[in-house]
Image (cartoon, rainbow, N blue to C red; front, side, top):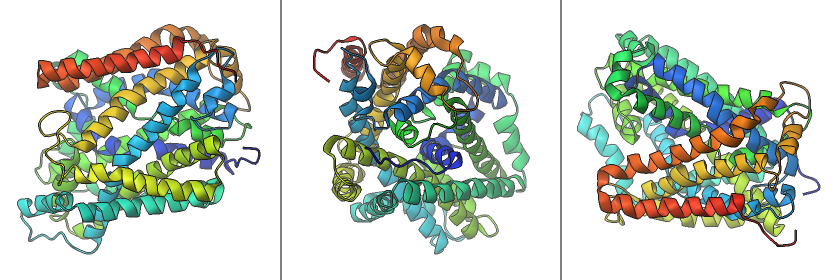
Length: 490
């Protein structure tokens, strides 16, 4: 695109990129696993793996985006060497973005719904734990209510994207992210001042080597490795699209470091909101949606001013979810404009309808189609969609971006390094080449295979063997993309 927009400031680029990385899964998962696997000891391991796993691939994705000035649908084609096969990943990257939005818009709708419920006082101190839990059950049982909130989240996010990169995505995401950071500090301070909150802080932040031993040091290391790898939302071009709108006055390493630090800050601060509050009211912290939609509302109704604090918390969660949706929608729009030369208005209109239609299976999976349990008993369609993205396209897509920046038949190390170090600021270390060529790809593949094993080993031989065949197929496809040759004319 000849007149492609660029972010008006480095702050805008960093906040939009961080908005994409900061996800609601990070907020409800990180505090729990941190306390479970040894508190501060786990955090130190997590930070180490964040530096050696997520950070280098983040720079790769930023570099591919900025050098090509295109979305994942066209960036590989624009940069790859003669005979390269990496452009084959474009459709898979696009599919990853659509799959992510097929369920993430529903979850974003849940956050907005609960913000409204807290704001208008639907939760009260007179309610029992069962009555609070029934609010979420009632929400998921009603396809029309869920669809309303999902469509509202979709409409708001596409409305932001329709305004353009600078006037819409950058300007409004900056406001949301600054509001998110302000809210998270206020909420954390409030939680720390609750009676008995320090016990939660101790559980969360004090090194607990006994807990590490009980869980198994290997399990703790792998949990930290997995969380560090997935936290930055790498592999489907969401970060590359941010890079494609970045000017070249500054190097990419410093900005990637800022994004990583912001993402980590939000995750750590979320723990200071949730864990002390749980301990203050004698509730064991739990992982997953129940923590957000059942446990925390039960805590808020017991607090003085709980209606306000609950509304502020779900406003914070709404900002976290919508900022991610906006970034991914921008990637989808850019793919449409790159491939089919649509204008932004047409791309917004067509994709708004597409996302609404594609979101319906996730919505129906909790009620009308609840009998369909694709990943075993208790699973729903949302779990399948999340599995395809989180367990497959994110790790394997990250492997593609990494290989593209290393292999001569892709873009090549020298080209990657030159782009990453263009501008003023912190340079990307040349000595990482060997590590990124031989060690990091192996770690990514190990994380991918271990994820499958952890998910299906406990569900029986049939599930394990069936889905192992899927894993092998995905690995074969990615291997063909990375190592295969093409004779097509570019």
